[in-house]
Length: 243
Ligand SMILES: Nc1ncnc2c1ncn2[C@@H]1O[C@H](COP(=O)(O)OP(=O)(O)OP(=O)(O)O)[C@@H](O)[C@H]1O
Image (cartoon, rainbow, N blue to C red; front, side, top):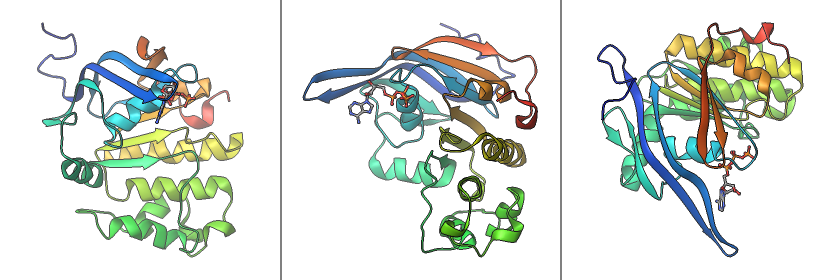
């Protein structure tokens, strides 16, 4: 069956078919994803919203090579994630994916520059830690330790770390979840800027409905499935969002 997005002039980053995830727990099986069919275009920014437990993070983790599906298929370009070896998934994450999580995950004993350098030292074609930190507005904070930075600044270091290797994919799970609105806007501005600069396909999971305005498409989850997708006619810059 031909898909509406598979026209020859549209490059597809992810082709997802029947993606299913069941967690076996002591309390019984938890159906986190119930047969998701979806395609994501190269260079798109998607914002994933929906109730707690509806499967957003599970999808992000599977597409990021951090978790494995129970059934179905998820293909990034020509790379089939489901069924890939652990080594292949590690190579994929290292080469292609930048991650940003809610709680920054910086190494406390390293400066901002050193936290970013941890990644650039093992990347294939990275920008310098200095360039990455300049892009997120931290040129004057490079030699600060995480404890000397605000939450928003720490998250911008995490953004710099995620994009310094020029990833094809940027996955953000609640990137502003622990920030006040002004810091959150600065982090989203940094994400929008670096996404445009490196041309990454970007997925952002958020509970903040305002963030949906910066997406090309908003993906609404319900009960382990995609209930609706909405294409924004115009993307709104984070600074102009109504928070
Ligand atoms: N490691 C795990 N073991 C067992 N169940 C899990 C695990 N991870 C997630 N789940 C369950 O899978 C379902 C989907 O969780 P998921 O984290 O993907 O939802 P979410 O939409 O991202 O929620 P939230 O917005 O609260 O982060 C939930 O019922 C959750 O409890």
